[in-house]
Image (tube, one colour):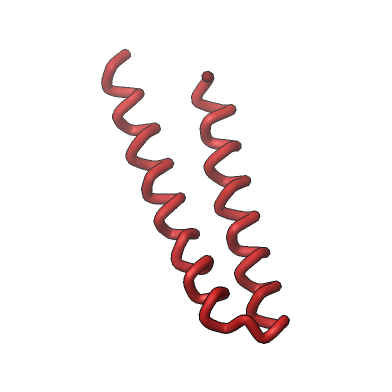
Length: 58
């Protein structure tokens, strides 16, 4: 998988997680919204780590 596609996957998944979290919040599923909202920085951190380590192997 190219770095560009990998970056797109990570950004898209974190964006979907953010939208899901906001949707849950306004639908009065507050605890679930906070839980899903925690995924956003975790997905971005994982993506950053994976892209950095894949660049070192080249």
